[in-house]
Image (tube, rainbow, N blue to C red; front, side, top):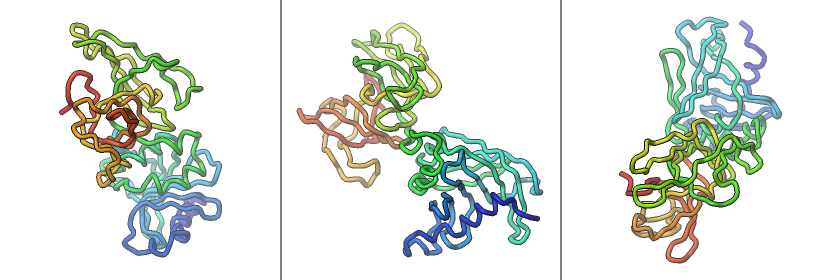
Length: 328
């Protein structure tokens, strides 16, 4: 058979993708995510540079609307032209890709080829902690996502669909909304004060022990704005039922978000081996007052606030959104 030109080009790019990598990255055991630009085409792949080994790959020309996708996997009916849906999953993100199968007879390899948008959702998936699961019919393959977002930089720059794409990180924690500034309660459709308003957050309400505030589930961040997919109110009302005030995808400013830090320190980056930026002792005693969020990564939040009369800033993955007690 003759491989379609776009697929053949993509595979050739994958095979030479290691050419621009430093010599130390050429080792055969350098299995992982790699990205490169060659002859105007940006590539991201899981494999070994310069070895000809790649299991999954994305590629696009600068300015393209989306990227080509190739996955080396034989479905149940591995015949030329078979149409199969490949689903990429990480955390709570799922991206289905319609693919067409092709048998490379010279290499006795079956490939599934499709198109995928290089948008905020794909970037969030590549930036998610843990594993990427790739599902095809009744089979699946898992890949660690360590380094995927960094390796995808060239691909995102070449054919990202919007300006927010490159800056988006995926997050997973809850917080509450507490801000009286202009437009503090407006939910927008993008990470900007100029983005369209798509909803309004409910205001404070009487709680068990004083004023309480609506709680939100944070799923991403970009340029000081935080993506949410849910907001509830009346969570701490003594008698009223909890009200789901918002579901979907919306954005709120980091200056409106609040949470408690229950760990003993803030760190200089979102990693378990990071250096301590601020020693805050027992965070649950209220000595640290968080008054804004700057960024996030997975379960980590970069917070700003006041500790012992001094402005502090740092990262924590030991946070709590409860307004009345500590978290488990």
